[in-house]
Image (cartoon, rainbow, N blue to C red):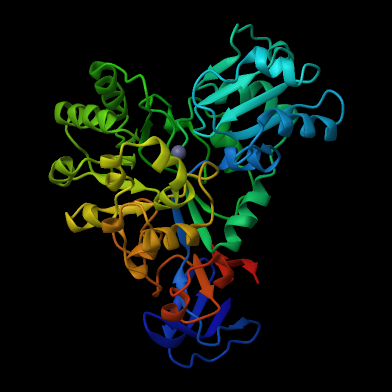
Length: 438
Ligand SMILES: [Zn+2]
């Protein structure tokens, strides 16, 4: 048992008792039961634990042991430096590469690091580039070395030899007050879900997986969310293929979460929804570009949008340089969607976005791009507090009977939200147990 004394819950300073995995009592001056752990909150806010509605846990663990190329001015120099640090024969894994076209392929990598296997991930997560040694190591012969959508293949051929440190990812997330994650990866087989389910994370897991994944035979301890439907950002699939993906998901009684980062892919997805019909739980992932004239249509058919306001801050310079000026205000909308009655929830898209949800909250409040999309801090935080299985459905609450997934801040909420930061997180409780104590 665990007793929080003097914590601020919905504006009142009271006590909260946790028994096993649930909140048992909420009230003033609860008496201490012998043997109970007591945490004095000193008036700090006790919130439901944050839920990141869109992230990629295996990629986060892999990124932790990778060379980070984001912001690198010279990719070749960064790769050569990493090459010198690694033991002979070890894989060199680099992520966050921001090149757009054909400026990295098998041959250019060979020229930089010829002797060890090298793989470089594009910052979108969709493309890996391998050198010849890497292709040889995994038994593939691709003339360009550019592999799209090959995560499962690479995982099965490489990661077995290099286990991921998922507990470290869990600890980092717990330090942000995160007690739940929806993993938005379109897993095509159960190897990824099994790794996650047995990975020693300290977060509740909701998984997506591809529409044709046989989720009934999946590992225990996870909840299945919507099926992930990927729409390539630049070469869109034919409408019939998208409809087929929706129908496969429906045949398994699943809702769909459709990856959309362009206006064209959004129109395609909406057309597929017109054909197949919507189902409770259907959602748009990212909604990076939502033209104003589509907002009412999205509201009408009852879709939820799970978006990333952190990107408009993290990638502001890039967006200003690459995106048409008239589209800048429709990037990662928040406010106009909520005002239209569309449920909105946040995910960080870590590791492609910063995993710290407090930065995303700050971004949603302070964003310079699309200022009409700014939210007040309470509304922004609420986008991380909704139910794992009902994103955008209103914040969970700290009250008896609720799961004991909790986040205690060092300060009352009003003060904390003046400068949202993970530094504010004092204690994180997951499933009734303290998993972070600052
Ligand atoms: Zn994602």
